[in-house]
Length: 194
Length: 202
Image (cartoon, rainbow over all chains, first blue to last red; front, side, top):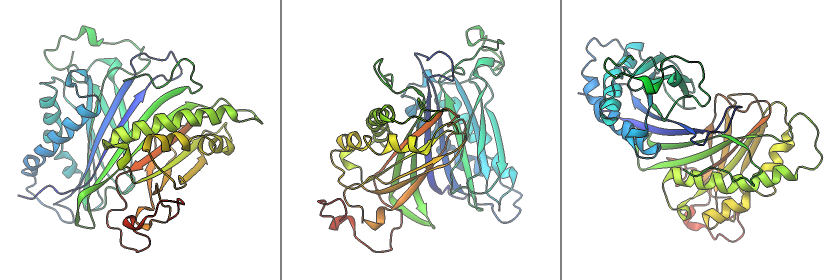
């Protein structure tokens, strides 16, 4: 069972007051936690990789907690989330898929059983590549005001034998959301969709 | 979270971002304690965009406000006492309708004093960089020891960027602070335990 070796971490927080419209009294906050880990499967095809998902669980929980802390410490303030991975050149896209379970379920645990599937994206790329992590409402994927994304990346990662793992949380709708659709106030909260 | 500016403030902030980087392993070697650094970035309206303005004192006043705000934010993000900060740097990127001199007006005349006030000391020059660029431009904030510019272990840089800034009429302003030098510094020069801390150089 390979250890998870973290080379570096990044926490990024954005606080958005306006985007050309009225200045909001409650700014939208977005936070991203990034961890750059060694890819134990880099350089060759490995058939059995799934057990690494269990190894990643503690890191997922740690990153989720750090996001709640970065957003002020109250898990109830979190309304949107997303996740992503960038696999270095000596790895394969499937290695990024290892993050779905430990990253997603960690956030849902920390947020008290969020119902919606965690929006995600992944790709293979070199150091400095940027990833647009998609964001949706934590309890109902169709809430249109909370569709968002956050661009993340690090100048020196991922190296070819690394994976950059990302989790993102937000505190509300887009700053000037006004294109209709399901409202957060109308969520039924049964199926994770509406 | 307090509003970042008061009604009397000259600074119109669209967004503020903070970044905290922690290096735990470098070239396979554990870094313990990890090296940590933080940057705070404000995206502001450029009141001088789109025209030649001779007197840039409005931007200088904005620089003074941002010096305090961004240093407080960066230190808070790093989560250490302000007096424990070891190195610092500043940078600005002006959107396409602005002038490089606008970045200079924000960074150089008045931004440094409040940075030093927050940190308690800081006799060394605050290293800086500036550029004009479009949305998503990378800003490389140079870093140097706050009390002795010649401390070689602390020469460094931190890259920050925001995909949606600076817009044409905006300026991105950044302050970075650290609790350490490079992860595996070993190229000699003045060491931090040799600092006299009088002239800002050694």
